[in-house]
Image (tube, rainbow, N blue to C red; front, side, top):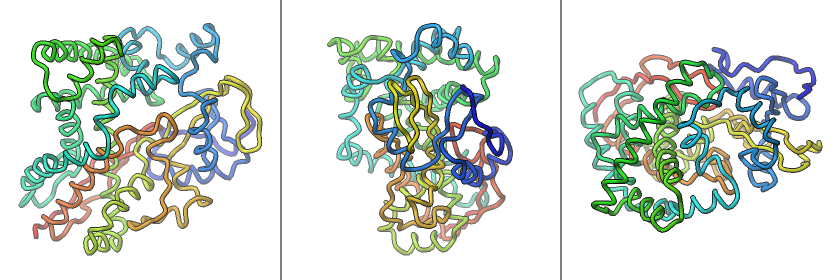
Length: 411
């Protein structure tokens, strides 16, 4: 790609970007057209209207298969250091998320029934019981790390329960998920590559053993449904593994991050926290605002399957677009006072859950987790204060604080 001159170099792993990506996004939006990012051979899309148009356009799939020839596909695999990873390629690089058309639709049909609003709402009592036990353990602690002592435990436990994973295994699965997800960022060193590949192999072996258990003794859980789907011919064993792995990985990491950044947002805007405490009916819109304000998955890419027009400019087949959801969700053309946190913001047409065929399957579950956690915290603690300014992860693909130290005073 021959990139036009840009006013600055975009460095998503920099301290500046981690501290305040939105100032960088604003500078990128001021650039006429799409912002070139030659390091990943793509054009970055920062405006809400453009991102929304791309995610809804079937001519712009997630994967380049059938768009780029084998030589170019191989070149890009090697450029991105995704080659020589047999287990990662089978179970991670291929998945429901990283597929399009009939394959994506077939795999999604096998699991979507477990994620309907009604079925997810039925999980509330179990989530409330688990969260209450965790929060009760923080009473009297004085100062805690909200991320390490609360946020990391809930999403993995909840999605593990839905899948049918033993509770004792959930911390191990969380570590495996983190080891795999870390390799999707810009930094793809050989050490990080080896970790992602070995973990994919371990994860796959675990899921094969879980599948064997369900074949012997089926249960009312998602793993059993996936086993039944494989037996019926609706998916292969590799697809069973990749789908279960994807649900476990997607079901906890982003929710942990948005829990941390959401709490930080409330503390940065104390009037909004007080408003939410006084009017709990605002919890649903407050949670949506947390996703808009600090989108936990701020970047995905798409490919042009044919010549397309974006923002008045025509781009050729094969063009790679990097969608910056974090930038789109702070676009002043779409949101009034986009850098302000408003627990009652309506309408709030954010793109944190993506759009089109790949709209986030677990969005209802993530929002329920957050509703229960923040409701329980406000009922348990009279005062929640920030103990120290958090450091955010240096990343293009994820957004969230590494830790969030809080001072708590029980009600």
